[in-house]
Image 1 (cartoon, rainbow, N blue to C red):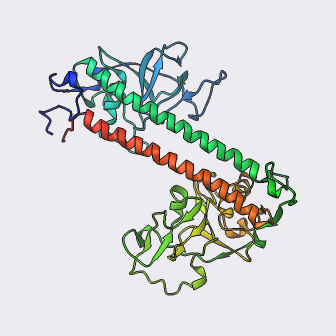
Image 2: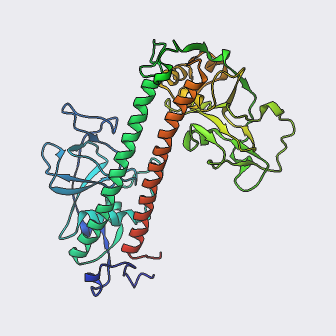
Length: 416
C-alpha cells in the first residue's frame, strides 16, 4: 500500500466511509512537559515510601499522572520518552520518573494517548548502543493517524483488551515460576541442613541426604572451542553445544528433539576428538563464562540424545558421573538450587567477564538422596511444573504474535 492510500486493511464498520488517515509528526499529537532533574542508579530503585522510581533505559512508557511531587498516579495518561533507547513497557502505579533523559509527554488536542503509544510501536526507529536521541529528534517522527478521535479510541480499546489478556497470562506465568521457586526451596535441603523441609511420604524415613564434593561424583572431559563461524543449522552429522545457547535458550533438562542445536560444519575435521568426549545422557554441561554473576556456571543436563551425536563446545565444561549416583533428570534441577548456585558464584573469578573452571567447580559440595526413586520423584515433580511454565510462555508468545498481526491490520501499511 502506498503513501497516498492511508487506509488500514481492517477498519471498524462505523468508520468504513471516513476519510483516509494522515501522517502527523509526534509534536502535533503530544505536548512535552519538562525533564526531571535527578538520576538514580537502578530501575529497581524505590523511594522511602516504596514507590518505584523509573530511570533512563525505558522508552515510551505509558502511564497515568496527576503530577504532584513527582509521583504519577491515575487519571491523566502520559508517555515517558527516554533519550537513550527504544524499548517499551507498561508500568504499575504510582511511580516516579527521575532522570534527565526521561521526558513526560501528554496527548494534545483530541488525540488518544494509548493510540499514539501503539502507533509509535509501528515506527522503524532504532537507536545505537549509548547513542542519545534528543526529544527534538523524537518529536519530528511521523505516525499514521485517523482524524476521528472515536476511531482512535476504538483501536486503543481493542488493543488494550488484548493487552489485559496478555497481562493476565503473564501474571499466571509469574505465579507458576514463584510456585516452582518455592518447591525448589522445600524439595532440596537448605544451607546447613541435611534433609529437605518437604519429603514425599514414601521417603520420610529414608534418613539424611548424602553430602559429597563434586569431584567425588563427577569427572570433567575435554570440550572443543568451535565458535559460531564453524557451526550451522542446516546440515552435518555432529551437533554442538555453544555456551551462548546455554545462557539464552536451552532448557535445564536438555532433550535434543526439543532444542534447536547447530551442527559442526561438515568441512571441519573432528577425527581427533576421542569417542568418550561425545555427550552421553546424564552429562552436565556448564557455561564457563558470563558477564552476569547470575549466569556464571549456568548448566544443563543431557537427558535425551535420541541416538544423535553431540559435542560440548566453546566456553563449556562437560562433567560425567564417575559411577551412577544421580538419576537422569535429577542433576538438571539440583544444579539450579540456590545452595549450589551460590557455591558456583563464590568460586567464579573475574571483573567485567566472570569465569569458572572445572577445578573450582570440583570444590563445591553437592547433595542428593541415596534412594534413586526419591531422586526420580523430585525430578518428575519439577519437570511437570516446567511443562506448565513452558506452555504458558508459548501461550503468551502466541498472544503477542496475534497482537502484532492485529496491529498490521488496524494500521495502514506504509512502504518507505
